[in-house]
Image 1 (cartoon, rainbow, N blue to C red):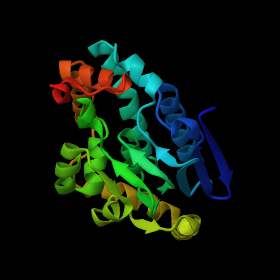
Image 2 (cartoon, rainbow, N blue to C red; image 1 turned 45 degrees about the vertical axis):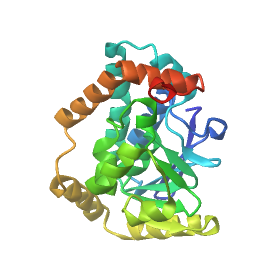
Image 3 (cartoon, one colour; image 1 turned 180 degrees about the vertical axis):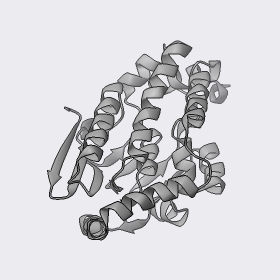
Length: 260
C-alpha cells in the first residue's frame, strides 16, 4: 500500500494517508488501499480502535487531479463503476466492526469530508478548514451524502452543500461534524484520550453499541441508498454542466455559468 501506512500498536490500528504532496487526494488506487486497510484492521481480533490520520497540511483534498482528468472523459457506465468503488470504501469504513477515529490535522475538502463523516468520531485542529466544494464544479456530493448528512445534520447540509462555502473548525464543531477541536499540540493527546476510553470498555459492548446506533439512527445506509447515490453522481458527471465544471477547474478557467 504505497499511498498509506498501516501500523499496529497493542490494540490500536493506525491508518495514515502518506501523500502530502497531493494533499492526500483520492485516486482509484488510494480508494482501493483505504478499503483494504480498513478491511484488514477490522478483521484483526486484537484491534480495539482504528485511527485514520494523514501527513502534511491537508487531511484530504478530495479527488486527485490526475484522477479527475480521467473522469472527465468517462462514460456513464465508467462513472457508475468509479463511484461504486468510492461508495464501497465509505461503507467499509462506516461498517468497520471496530470503533474509528478521524485525526484531522488539516484541511478537508469534497470527498475527504466523506472520510471524516464515515468515522465514528472526529478530532480536528483549530486551524483546519472544511468545504463541500462540488457545486462549484457543476457536481454534487452524492456518494458521500449519506455519511456527511448524518454527521452534520440536514439543516447544515442544506447550507454547505448548496453554497460550497469554506467553514472553519469551530463551525464544524458547532454543527456536530467534528466532536472536538484542539490546538495542534493537543491533537494527539485528545485522540489518545478517546482511544483509552474505547480500549477500556467491553469490546463486545462497544461493537454492539456501534451497531445499535446504525440500526436506530434515521435511515439505513443500505444497498438501495448507496445505489441511488452512485446513480446521482454518475448522472451529473456526465451532464453538460458537470463536464464543463470539471474541465474549467482542470483548465484553471471560469466555468461557462460564470464566464457569461
